[in-house]
Amino acid sequence: MLFKNPIILYGLFFLIVPIIVHLFQLRKFSKVAFTNVAFLKPLINQTRKSRQLKKWLTLLARCLTVACIVFAFAQPFLPGSNTATQEKQTAIYLDNSYSMELNGKNGPLYKNATSQLLEKLPADRVFTLFTNDKVFANTNRQQITNDLLANTYSTESLSFNQIQLKASSLLDDKNAAKEIIIISDFQNTTGVNFPDTLQNIKRELVKLEPQEMNNISIDTAFVANQSGSSLKLQVDISANYEVNEPVTLTLENNTILLAKTSVLLENQNGTAYFDIEIDEPIIGKIYIEDKGISFDNELFISTGTKQKIKVLSINGADSNFLDRLYNEDQFDYLSVKERDVNYNLIKDQNLVIINEVGNIPASLSIELNKLTKNGGFLVVIPSSPSSGYETIGLAGIEYNDVSKKITQINFNHPLFKGVFNKRVSNFQYPNVKSVLKSTNAIDPILKYEDGSSFLYKNQNTYIFTSSLNLENSNFQNSPLIVPVLYNMAVNALPISQLYYELNSSNAIAVNTDINQDQIVSLSNGITEVIPRQQAFDNYVLITAGQDFSTAGNYDVLLKEEKISNISFNAKRQENKLNYYSNTDLGGNLSVSIDDLLYKLDQEENILSFWKYFVMGALFFLICELLILKFLK
Image (cartoon, rainbow, N blue to C red; front, side, top):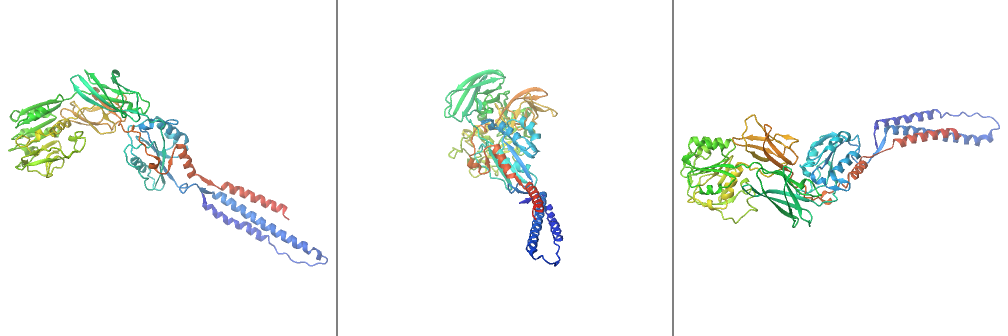
């Protein structure tokens, strides 16, 4: 038993008062002898005994009355748990990811959880509540009601480890007992085990289960083929259940119906194609009708303004392998001999290739260094003999007449992104007959069998350590040459994609020239965002996707004038609908918010006894009155 006001227990010393009163009443009787009273002696003895009993009972009643009054003011109680009497800090995580849009017993999981929290939480309870995209610190039910009801689903999704770490940072009172409440459907989107509870923090889980989990999703879309004004779009869709009827997809351009098609899913997957003729860029969306999660029922797309990548090759050797590679429509390619270079063209290029030029004059190196400094890219294929290469980053060029095989590929390098389905070990590797005397590079792309670098990158410069002419190397005939040189050009100017993912750092090149005091902004008609951007001579590189959370088509604005369009869509991970089991989640698991709040109420409940001691004081006071009145 504990006491709310234990200092009042010193009042028990007042028990000495009735005892002192009792002692003053114990007066001695003097004997007076007189005749003819012998027959009264038994009666006198009996009267004395009853008076003694009456006084002792009165003393006991008075002492118990005083003791009960003291205990009542001390307010004794029994706590419901070990932490019931401690000061508490509570952080509540309310999952507002798209999977919480599914219906439970009482409607959408997120909206129902919001309503129950606002209805059932004690009005005077202070807590911190956070979702995937917002934090409401040290608030109560009344303060948070309007903001929480207005909050919507978020494209951002926190892992459960991130949730616990974030909650821990919000619980900053070192003297308080810390408690985390996680309200979610507990999707397992990462495939990892559910994290353990953090040390010194109590964790409560509320698992909300959807009633209907059938869902069809538009997974991705891309340009399968384009020739002139003919465009072939490929759209991949999937379902988490067997769909027997064809799924209809609709393509809109600027809210105008452009095309419709149907696809029958096999093994819960399907591919649809749109063959369309376009005279202007598409700014629209592809959508389906589905009763599951809604965010994956549509995919916003925009083809943007077609931009050609400018590639210039300066040749001191045969350039047929480059001419064949860069003759596609997406490149603005120019090949010149080293003696015919127009230096004024260099600053406008996205990629310049030095193809075995014998001598790099100072005027050329100045322009090449300006190019790389301003965001352009340079490819260096050295010549033998050569001079002037030290001015562009290759000091002390000297060849060794030693044959080497190119056997090691850096599969993680951006040049090989999407090139290999798996890491190959039986590849027909090319070889060279002579190589530069070079050490291991910091950022190798291709390496020889001895570990030294055949191709590496130094900032915006790609450097080969051997010439690529057919007399020295068979690299021109290797399958590696196409993805290597092609992706060098593609990465020099990030091509506008059909769409980008939200909550990702996307590097997007906008083909426009701006002054130093001008900025590019993105607008969807409701909100306008200024993304992080870097201006180069012939384009602006913006980094966008983490600045906003609403999927849709965005106008790229320069001085309030639209110059292009970009589309953003939420990541397709919340529609997998793979959940942690109850066993995975472990203990402290509740099936509803009602269940959790009842459990917490029982743990925090305090059984108070002060009223019983007040009743005891009245009882013993009445007993004293009855003893004084009726006991003779």
